[in-house]
Length: 451
Image 1: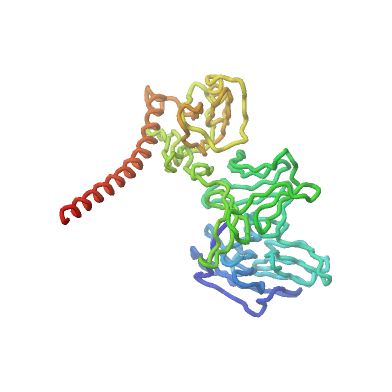
Image 2: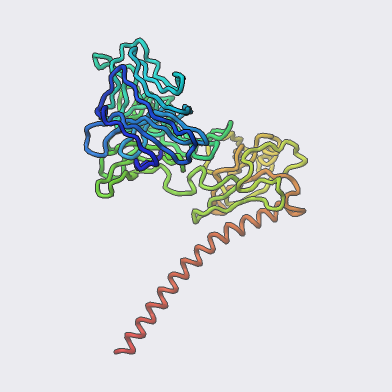
């Protein structure tokens, strides 16, 4: 989810059609700059609803992305982008960005020489007009107001009030400058958040209805996210923590957190009334790869410093060490992982768990807990837990990376770094209390002297 303020380098508005519908034969064109300009965003406002602000708006957009210009159709609620035609696949163009509702009912985005980059595929379905409804749903309808295409059927990273998502559909969000992405999956027995990185898919949060009841669809209501069974009976709800009308649910592209949002007239902005994860260390990418999130919500790199080939906080994030004679496992006590849904072996020893990861080329780390062994292809999502709880996190590294005392040195170094980070915070807190105590005592002595 990204927030925009409608203050752009160049903003193009067309007011002639700023109502709630567009008819067949309509066409609007945005010029694309000849020279690439980083940060450029140009928009033509097409339609808007008649609600009190914040209302819904549909716009044609040209945006500078990765050295090229992207052309897309977008929907906004106030200043929040809630739908985008290029969410999964951007349409890059030059010279011009054209939106056209053809006479035979197909809505298209085009570039030069009528090159089509996106379309609804509704030709021949007797479409008469494009509308934006009061729910924010962008729809193509015929002369009987029957919907032939709707944006609600193509969810992005936002779910609007009244929108419904069936089992096997999902929301997705894409962090900037990352090959990983997040998703909210609707499954038969639960809804869950996932981190996807290459071939690896790990869950990091879930919500299940009681009594193992099956989910058929979910719907965002006024007071929360409602889960329904196949008999259209509400079986569970994730409830808003504010007594305010919910406007949307969003999967954050920066953190992967799931939030329910309402509009605050006093603050004149959207605020979260519920978040799935309330602690930084429970986020899957709270730290860089090969980093540990500590009790103080700070990151301590378990980078292995003396060899350029070794993993570090900005290095490789996958396995690939296949020659068992060239690798070893570094054990970190008091460290667990927020990532779930990984291959698990039961009734094994810690030594067997270590060997299972060493023998597997795709394994980069392992977690051992109460005779259970979990294998990971990524060294991500690691967090500090109470020592003595039984968690042992093991990371695969090249042998000799740290000299002749590799394992012990790395373990000590990690523990020292974690301790230093937390220790500094504790010292600052205690120092603050001490300063307040001294100041208060000095003030009391001065008052006594005056008396």
